[in-house]
Length: 310
Length: 310
Image (tube, rainbow over all chains, first blue to last red; front, side, top):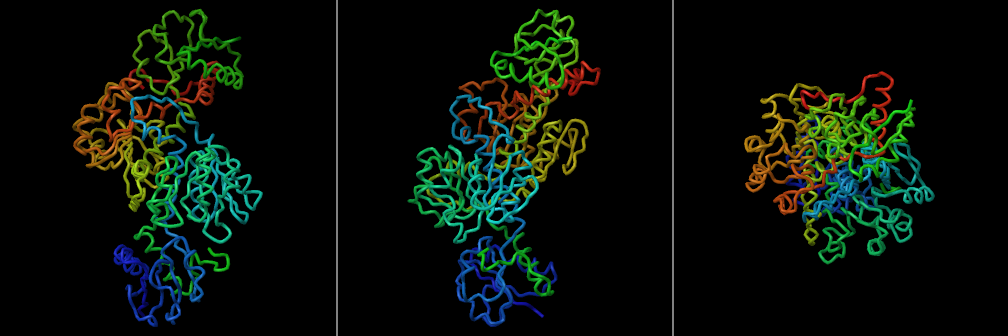
């Protein structure tokens, strides 16, 4: 029997997925029709971007599951009309892309690259950076992405501390948890990476108090979620020199408004939400595998715990 | 018996090593006197920087070995007055530092970071870079450093080709050799890393002909030796767009003269010979271990083949 897969996302996304998604479903042996429009009562699965026009799931009476196209679920998890399982996007491509962004920007700040990229002025600045083994990095958030980034950085020699709400273990990583653990994790971080989910509990994780717990001159990377940072507190910490640089990929409003002070700030680098971009080719495979599992009666992967919010 | 170790290098280097070197020798159980001056006939070992004032080794009549402080030996290997074994510097810190520089700059170009570092102008450039697995990197030179860098990049997902004069093997790397292998290695390189030693045979490895064998728009990284590149051919290739960017850490004359066209070139990043900087703490351990081996009658490590020149 053919399963009907509604692709509920912006038109740009459909352009990227219209080929990859049917291909990936065919590869796993699912006879599916994928389309951006169906009569609601005929839809079996929704491949979903939270910014799509579908906000009321009530008419989708035979819906089996919603497969989020994004890693972040904060804009759908609270939707009371959604009664079926919701799967986060865990995309091989997204994980690799996040590792590349985080590793690249950690090395950029570690090596002091900006000095050379900006300073092509004939001045030979023979400053030898310390080795990675002398540069402690802390990652807040030890989910799928945080753990993968932590282990890659540890492999390059960085001493890595990973903090999470509940206790975790990861080989080669100093794992801390809870409020006291957070203070200790921050106190060591020459480079801090934010990879927490956006929930009510994580909003403004980086605020005036926690920014002050970092070593003076720390660098902050935020490839996670905009709401993790109290932006006003961050701007004050940049002014005072408490934070020497912030490289930010996620913002409360995106695209970041042209008038936002982050844009013009010499100690801020804005990247346009590319760290956690899903790649259609690999993401389509992830969606197809989950539909195959549901059809075969196997447990689906990466289901969201709606109570926890991630 | 106390061994006398002459430290023959610039005064700045002595400042860095005067503490680490005696400590490292003591750690391996060698009773040594380390000093920047001795009567030549009392010297057992010379810890040597090729730019030191010692250029005639004839008066050092009881010399057992010369321990180069630099990875590069091209400025000492041809010295006819040197009759004892010469060891290259293979420093854990140097290898780590090289891996960090190469990985950092490969990721910088792969991610298109400069666009964001330079372009803080309020324009949201939502360009998602390809994944590392779609970005072929070629390394010329598969010695200690080239192999280490190749394996780190392969670990991040880059398809890595390594080329060397004579055939080599390295896990996870496509290894090529010889003139035909060079052509093939160049033809695939979206990012090319030069890590060949400076010898008569490698001078101008990157010249008009070989630059043209790269894919249009390739990026060149040179953390190796300045003489590997024909600078005029490189400047022409940058003008024509054949090479989109060159990040160079080694030059024929260092410091790179302020009038050199590389400095002002928007497609060139100059870094001040930091990729292969030895770190005194780790380098001192490497020197001490080799002196311990010679004193114990064990084979020394990293001896230079004077005929090959490296």
